[in-house]
Image (cartoon, rainbow, N blue to C red):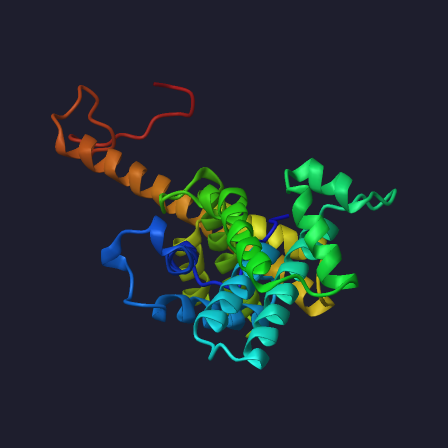
Amino acid sequence: MVQYILTPWRDRAELLAVRRQFYPDAAPQAQLRPGHAGQHDAVARVSLWMQRGGCPHLVESTALLVAAILSDAEGGGSSAGTYAARAAYATAFSRFVTGLLDGHQDKQRKLSMYSVAKTIGLPATFVELRHQATHEQLPSLAKLRAAARRALDWIWEYYWRALGDGAPSADEKEDETAAAAGDCVGAVVAYLGAGGGDAAAMSGIVRRFGQEKVLEVLEGIMDEPASNKLMLGALKMSSEVLEGAAGGEEEKSCETAMDVEQSSGDGEPSGSTGWSTYEGTWRPKPIGVV
């Protein structure tokens, strides 16, 4: 069966556009908006992705850390604003470290955060700062600012840099193939859901996706049918597709035979006259006499 990978972004280009907005220093200046507008747009887009579900933890952490930096940069500098900035930094940083390490935790036996951090290359100082921000007094604003910048650098090296420059990889080509297969499944299921029987629609599906892919999808539906009606419809459609292919081959062979006969008739006559009118007077003869 095809394994589908669902992402909250529309395509790879959209994800790379958000990366350029989060990390403007790593992107050509012609592709950036002035000021912090691009980063604000990226934070808003990731917030939308979070509502859709399936957003990677490091993408969310990048958005939270950048949002804390933007809020700090645009704050008024008052004591209340300073404390709010410290809280925003601490929350974003703690969520980044905790979610990352929990995702790499061994489910069979519990490991310490320091052990998991060492396994994935996360600095131990990140775990210490997370513990302080969660269980002790909030760290100073200067310390949190520096930690947020270091966290963004680490996420870039660990996640964002690996996305490449936009050229599709072999895995993405497989994803596109899986998406095409998903379109075939949707087309077949929609055809069966409408009751089938439309020869033109069925022929269109076969022409678009190919007989082999359609038969593979029908076989998968028959193996795990959602209902008896769907299974019977898939069985009927499968037989119709096979009959259509066999009929096409038979017509092709008949046309070939007719072409051969026509070409032989157009050529020079052979030595045998074949059937012809008897010339002369017919005289009856006893049976067996030549």
